[in-house]
Image 1 (tube, rainbow, N blue to C red):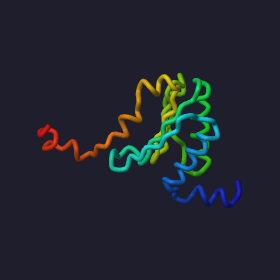
Image 2: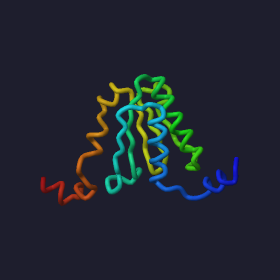
Image 3: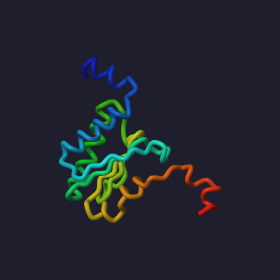
Image 4: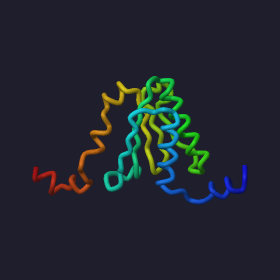
Length: 133
């Protein structure tokens, strides 16, 4: 490991750099229909959600493993991964970003894009607003 690699992994990393690594990895692995959703102000679980598709369970698993490896190599630490056993839907928790890699049929069934792209805010769920509906 070179000195540059060591110093870059010990410095705090930015969310924009994390997104760049994720998007590059997905593109390199030929993921399809890649979208990024800004979650700031919508939830505290992450700042961004990235959704992509792979053509088969084998490709979904490979994409997910490569994204996780690339994030770790860039100094962001290990990711939590769920769903590799079946690889119909793999979720990667990279801290500031959540990545979903689906097979196309599973992606269309759950339709996460629609749910997270809704123009709502946490303030829409205050007791006053809920009772006024």
